[in-house]
Length: 377
Image (cartoon, rainbow, N blue to C red; front, side, top):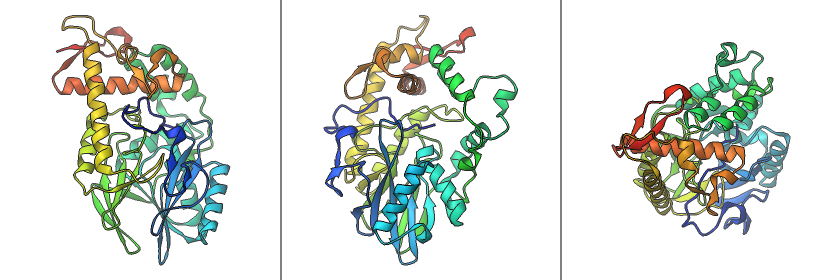
């Protein structure tokens, strides 16, 4: 499940991800190589097949005893080969890797780290909030079906879409999820080390502050190197897009609230240069967090404006998503592909749930459709 293609993007960002040039390479940010993002830090873009983002940035941190990699890429042969060649280009190799620090559980960040960690006998570290997702993913890709298949219940992601009122999309996603092929459960094996709370890590001569930033996923972490002025941001702070919100297993009751609170936590750190998982390096963490918070406040206002008065039948996330423009191009919801439309429906529901938590909207009875509806408070 690739979950990094966002449903919406802040309109104030001048350069979109598809055309962004990264200052460390002077080339398109997804071009292969090992680019010097900072002293002792190389950015290694690895490919994402059939994904609009094109690549995920893996960061190699040098120290006297070897390399620490922040994120690992998608466990596909092309990514493995490019990681190998990139490490060789800086005089290193897989044998120099001592540890993987993974920002979150999505396959383009975790799976190659888990496969190589097992092969190389090195530590793979992940936030403990990702444990339920790993339980589900290991079962989904294993030889035995997960419990929802055994009991005839709807797959988790399809049920999420149905709660957002996107029934046609839920039917399609249920079919895709049930067709997942077994034999990849080793991609989703548990990490060697769980991160709990905020902790400081020693990486050679560096001190990395591991800061828990739930929202995009429950167990997402960023790694701050305040001495070097760097924020290894994963998908939490992206320079040209906002990550998908509400696309989590198991479901989160307030994913947007958690995401915005995490942005506020990161903005409370010193201003750092963002080293993102997707896109070019170098943006101010303070400036970008402020932009992302402003963007979601704007989306909240638009969602609120779409709702009917108290006592009306109410609207679903799918209904409200249909009133909004999507991506920088303000694409109509009806023109999105099924994957992006699913993300948009769930993200809109996340905005509506936050409006409820703020007291601006109320949930109405879900009725027999299993869809949650919302009205003005």
